[in-house]
Every structure is written in structure tokens, then in C-alpha cells.
Length: 326
Image 1 (cartoon, rainbow, N blue to C red):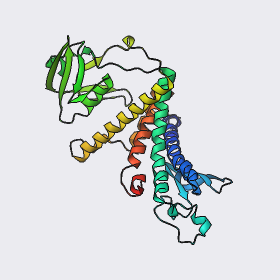
Image 2: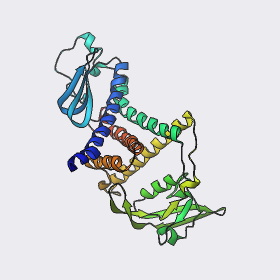
Image 3: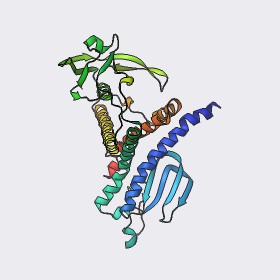
Image 4: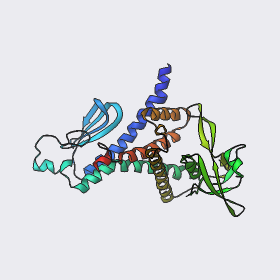
């Protein structure tokens, strides 16, 4: 029975997660290809042995395959699923009008970037929906509590201090503070804060603290500032219009993209360990943990965050990825 429970909490959410994100990505390619007059011969979720398939009136075969770790759109005239080669068959002049390989560069570019674009659009719509229907909560960058013995207390920070910048980066929310602390790779921070109308500057080392990771049910060690935000009781969700929800969602999507790019840059420069990047197994663990211990909303937000990473990864100039085609 235990394996059935694990399947329900880990395998199924993982398959749902990847299935949705891959469908969104490939449907972006599919939709723009159709708008550009390109014929799609196959639309597949997964690789390997076909489990189910159906051909529609336009000639596209929609498939579900056994290995749910990706998917593809195969266009008319493509020699493989990655559209990196052409079939060794002669196409008629009429067929060439609808084959990807014979399109002008602008149409090809639009089709290629439509996949990552769809992932970004999905994330924006998820965030916007959360903001619009549940309200938007922005915790101000104000210290609510200083942890006894922590780095902040030893540096002289006090409850009520308003943080203006961390390591030279201006902050407007407490999440910004948390992000900049996480991005500090040398174990030190420079804090600019306001106290009683006066601006102060502090520079001090972070403190390695062991904290409970609720998802993994174990303690993890992290460099911490040693402060807490003001109580959630003091900050009420704000009702926002559709436009405000969309603009805030776009800003949040860009924030997460920027954070990811900075982290990748730090790994390339050797300042951050590559162990910080989670692979397929880690994604499966996180999706299962979230589905097991949290609600559907947390799972949806996690899906949106992963969608951003999927879209960004596919824009990297790596062969076989969309960025390689670009």
C-alpha cells in the first residue's frame, strides 16, 4: 500500500506537472505554426512508445508517449522531432509552402520562440489570477523582529528598521531582501537602512543557521540575515484590477527570471555550486512534497515558477533547444 501512496503523492503530481508545462510549451509552437501556415504532422506529449494517438482533420497526429519527460511538435518536412534536419523526400511546391524548413527566417523565429513565450505567458496568467482573485500581498522591507544572536542583531539592526538596499540593490518588499541575501555568494552583506529618518549603512557577515525545511522534513543550513518581516496580521491583501494584476504578475515573472540568470552567471563564474540546480529527481521530489503537504494553490504557483525556468532554459543557445534554433 505504501507504494500506492507514494505514487499518488509523487509520481502522479510529477507527471501532471511536466505534462501541463510541456503541453503549454508545445502548444505555443503549434499555435504560431498554424498562424504562419506551417503544417504540424505530430504533436506529442512524451517520448518513446506511443500509448495513445489520434489524427485530426488537418493531418496532425496527437500522441501520448510512454516517457513523460518532454514533448515535441514535428512539422511537415522535418527529419526528426527537434526540427534540426529535413526528410530526404521531395516535397511538391505546394507542400513547401507549408513546410517549416522553407519558411522565411521571421516566421521560423516566431514559431521557435512561441514555445518559451507560452511558458512565460502561462506563468504571468497564473500569478495574475492569484493576485486578482485572492488579492496581492506585499510585505514592506521593514524589520519586524530580530533573531537573538543572529547576524543582524550582532550588526546592530533593530525592529522597525526599513531596509533600503542589500548589496547595492534597491529593495521594495521583504521578498526582495530575502532574494538579495540568497544571491550573496561570499557570505557578506552590505545593508542600507533607514531608522528614525536617518540613513545608515552596515556591512557584516551572514550567519550559517540550521532551519527546518518543511518540504523535505529535515534541517538545512543556510547563510541567514537573522530577521523576520512584520506580522502577516498587519498586512492585508489588496484588491487589484485586472490590469494591475497583469502588470504585477509580469514584474514578478521578470524578477524570477533575473534571479535565475544571476544564479546561472554565478555558477559559470564559479561563485555558486552547481548543486544548487535541481534536476528531474529534485523536481519530482518538490512536486510530490508540495502536493502532499500544501494545497493546490501552492502546487499551481510552483508550476508557474517552473514554467518560467523551462521557458528561460529553452532560450539558451544550446543545440536542439529553441535557443539553438534561434
